[in-house]
Length: 364
Ligand SMILES: NC(=O)c1ccc[n+]([C@@H]2O[C@H](COP(=O)([O-])OP(=O)(O)OC[C@H]3O[C@@H](n4cnc5c(N)ncnc54)[C@H](O)[C@@H]3O)[C@@H](O)[C@H]2O)c1
Image 1 (cartoon, protein in one colour):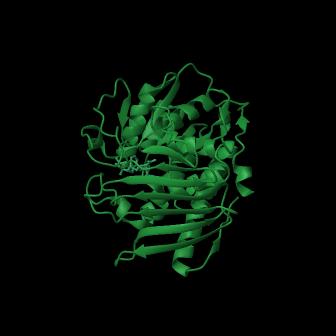
Image 2: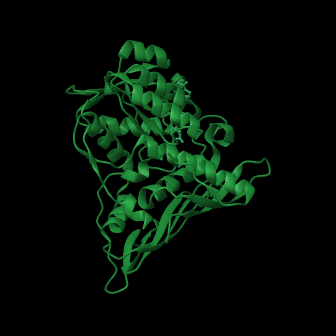
Image 3: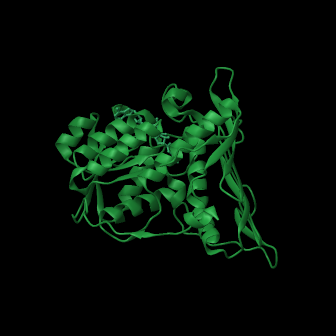
């Protein structure tokens, strides 16, 4: 079975560590919605210190942002003794951080990540890794050649989210038999929590609903069931040509796996992400609008409500990267190659939606 391959959680140890200091010095670049989220998490990490915050728009440091689909992004602004700056190159030269955390619009991910890696600085970069798989390849190449053992991680956060890790544990353990079918949904209005006209609305900059939003579930499908060999997608397009909604059937062997992503929900609907996975001996449902948001409905016995780890995935992804940088043994939960392959998955999905045909996935 294909998914057997995906369920092996190998452990990896990093021999040459990028950082052997008591406190890892971090610069957060981009202080919009996700920059604030990551900054709030880094502040809570023992063994790391935010030494610089960089945003080309300095007024971002004066205002709180309301909105977004997640809690925690509008913390009060308290920067301690971190340097506040607006020029990335200057910041690297002045501060020489151990890690840059890139929370910038997607087109900037490759260029800034590569600059940092070339200087031996480790990079945590928000998803999607880049606008194209070719650009992802350039980032991977830079990471392989990086001095000081500098490392690259792409923040595909669902791999670290308790409700999704819980699902992976159920699949890997075979506790309820084999999975028969899985469906994942992610619904939102178009993100617009930034100032002015949001860059998300420009599909050439954000990659649109497929690359920006739905990639979360595409990456999750890869995490849970292995990289699909082919995809069959259907999409709905706005009259100006941008994609508003996508639905995909993934070829992962004997399991029927689908995911859909929407940026055309009414504002009154809000944000929603859920899944239903049917096993031979149970159905597992995540749905924040149910009385029991996450529950197992076994074929025999009572409904089970699992207890999850308390934090959001952002906390665990940053903790994982920090542990990895510090040379701790960490489970192999993600790699830059896997994040690259998720971008390739989306490329195949977009092609399939346009052509109406099944498209092979060009994974590496
Ligand atoms: N993991 C998640 O759940 C999640 C959620 C939302 C966004 N994201 C991703 O995070 C990234 C950032 O999204 P966002 O919502 O924070 O965007 P945003 O527009 O809120 O913030 C981007 C920030 O980058 C700054 N910026 C732009 N160019 C810059 C430059 N050259 N140098 C320094 N600063 C610059 C902008 O002024 C802005 O403050 C995107 O790739 C997006 O897809 C991930």
